[in-house]
Amino acid sequence: MRYVTKAKTALATGALLAVAFAVPAAGGATSSSGLTYQVSPIALPAGHTVNGFPYTPNQCIHQFGLACYTPVVLHDAYQVPWSINGSLAGSGTQVAIIDAYGSPTVQQDLNVYDTTFGLPATTVNVYYPEGQVPFNPIVRGSLQAGWAEETSLDVQTVHDLAPGATINLIIANSPSGNDINNAIAYAVSHNLGDVLSMSFGAPEAAIAGGGNNLQVQQAHAIFQQATSQGITLFASSGDSGAGNGYTSPNALYPASDPQVVATGGTDLFVSGSTSNYTWKSETVWNDANAATCPFGCTYGPFGATGGAPSSIFSAPSWQTPGMRTTSDVAFNASVYTATMIYLGFLGAANNGFYFFGGTSEAAPSWAAITADLVQASGGRWGQLAPTLYAIAANRKTYAQDFHDITVGNNAYPPSTGFSAGRGYDLPTGLGSPIVSGLLATLAPSAQLGYTAP
Image (tube, rainbow, N blue to C red; front, side, top):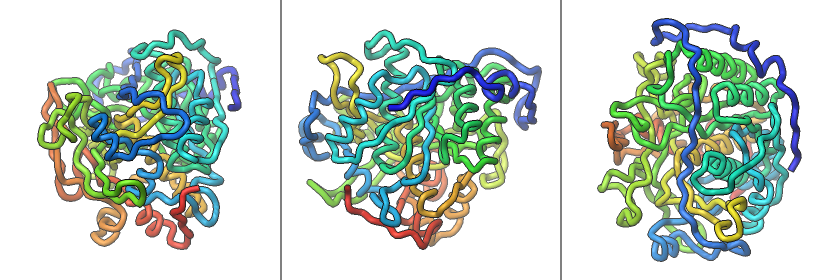
């Protein structure tokens, strides 16, 4: 693991505050009130398996009441190639991941993950633009521990779906809007990613001044610079339904920024017992919906995907006129259909694999898939959403490239929500990816391999 600690650059400090832009839905005076981002990685302990993961998804369902999805399961279900043009998927690309505080064991945890699941090893490059904050305490539920869990989820997820990509982890020294903006600006100004993943957010209802908030304006300017450089941005739609914890639907920011691809969540179900898994079905992730909460909902509700109209941003040209809506796309995000992630910073009694969920799985998953696309096509894609919506506008390519999620809703207490339906819907956007189809459409000459390394 390579660490880089540097002082603040001009781009990462107040210089960007001078950049102004018009936000169509905003009104009133400019607000400088602070913005604090939150992460909510959702996880249950799975024991201390470190020398080989023994469970199939069905075995986990019978033993724990939750499915457990390993890298092979996710590659098979979403048809993600292991190699492209004879090299590991993601080779020659960079994925930038933004988190706060970081994890003291991010490299060691990835090493365990790779050894357990037979993935090729890689080195995580870690950057601290404002200096490294000491990690304390190592207690689940603490602020720093939550961000450390998020960091492990982000890194291991990207390496799973783009095992050849270079991972650049840029760590803010707090989850404040200014510090997160500084970290993103550092990644953009140093060109640290063809793709950039943000698994955090703040409900728009909690943002003082809405679109007139200086930190929102600063972030938007950074996002515009990123996409102008060809960097594709992803962010999570939220884990508390359409309301994101409020009584009325409201979008999660920065996923609601039109420069960003907003990633919603699903429950993914697969067929297959020991290998050759195939996609079976998907529903909107919503544990509060008794009709769709899987496997008897043994542990009760963990959460539900976000997805709602923005109160800040007008709809971009590729969406229906009115206000910008999230989500744009979706990926598996339920703890009941969990991805397995290793945590090694909690002390010997608590270290081990955990069942993880949340739309913070969806953002790095789509970032990794886009890194595969960059490799396959030979170039960056920048603002990817218009391309994805154009694919969906064609019935043939839509059926080839997306799973259309039509069952479920994201009404989660205390808010109402929105139902899935044919084509675009707010909980799951255009749907979840059929990666082989997307690559065939956007990089038709690429040679794809589906044998695990």
